[in-house]
Length: 338
Image 1 (cartoon, rainbow, N blue to C red):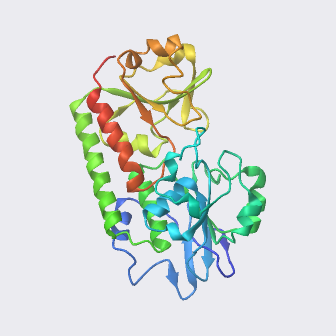
Image 2: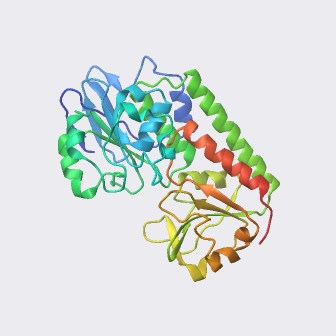
Image 3: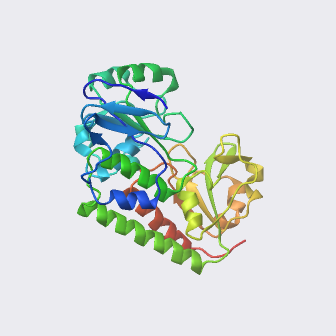
């Protein structure tokens, strides 16, 4: 395991796969036997297996915007000094990922893929960088071309694996990091968010039971390509399956393990009664697809059974409960058409 000894104001991260049991333990707040802080300072091992040690709990955090919003959901907004990733859409509106972040109090280091202002980052004197990790050892939204400079400024990174892991497990893992940074997971706001999440999950379970056999496909549309997502790779989609939703599983997933690419003439390869279409600004919207005759011919489209899907989101109960509520509503309004 890679262990980095750090000077004052540097971070740490503790790792390991965490499930619902770990989150239940975490919900008790910070116990006297706090595993993150001791005589030797603060430490945490991230999902790369890298451990960082610091004298004090990190107080100047720069994070991918979704991770920053997650930390804010757990009451840690005051520890965040900068963010990177999409904070505003192409229409100059707040991106869904921002959640309840107060961007006026933060420095935005980059809004688009490949953007990360290293000079601004250094000026923030960060203790810790936090981000998602979809592919092993690849830091989400941290440009490969400037990664070395970024790590030279601050080698303290906590990367949380968010792919090929269920949604409750991923939320629990991020909750563990939040608790390590000082969050009280038994605070009323956190408890209310968990209750809303549980109710939303039950609503999906009930709606799926009322629609047996309904096939649901999650996809992203681009000029010339239709991406069919593999539920095994996505934390949300795999959880939908756990709740009883019959998700379409593509047969020829690409080497990255996330989706199958279909040319538009083969878009009907996988029959679906409900299509959850990527609603990010990088993909084609249903309105943009109306001129596409193949799209118009799909059974779900003819039945107007198209729902929105947000593949990138913040991994907290507050951030994901609305996603489950939307899915439950889409299931309830859909019928078998294939």
